[in-house]
Picture 1: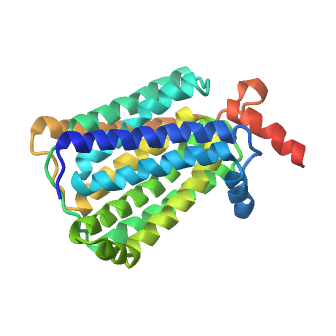
Picture 2: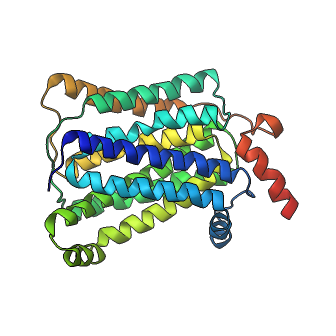
Picture 3: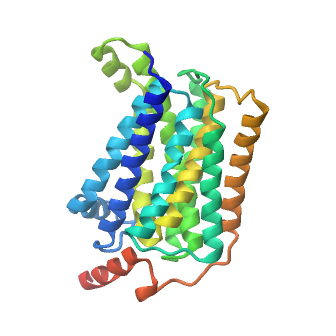
Length: 316
């Protein structure tokens, strides 16, 4: 099966738009909910499922993921992932217009640098086709430690209870980004089943018998729950870009190697690719080394969190 490059890019843009608009809708819904506690998973899940506005955002995200699976069947990682990562620009615009979030001077420059890194990665994309097969052994060797590290970063950030601070948002974003990156690798591996089977029965059997389906389900579920807690506690304009660029850089590096995609042969595109990755890593280091700022309270806090705290206190 094959699709034209414009069709693939258009579908990737649709996936990025649906996914990130869904994130903003979720953030708005989280502002009307009690504070989420990752230590009480059943209560956390029940709270999310009982909120229609959150479910609407979640449905948009699922639609975006479905589009992502389809486009990864036809296009290489280096083409699709930069387009998906461009959704960070939409998040920044909507977080300012819809959520009324504001960044400080240093944060503004760092987030702007993330956007530049995404553009550089997109400009480095090539049209070369990649393989849909990766060695199961190497996949496990990459995915398992990445998932463990992501879980440790995200849970550690949320346990510190520095709600609304830049530092907690950065580490939660890095942790969830790694988990989402692992899920993206599983999606890429599953997309090969659509290529290798010609019938619906063959596709269904192949998907259900693949360990990547369960890796995808587990990593997405854990990442989503941790991400929701981080999104409620922090600012979307920090958590989402950091999570997005972490997952994107991780997926581009790991996916290019695991699925046997070559680096750009053009010196110019190679420089753009390496510069984009280096800039993204540098920004994460700079944000992560910022001094822990004080928890924001009242009207100065994140609007979503400002709504969550009174609700939580009212139920105690």
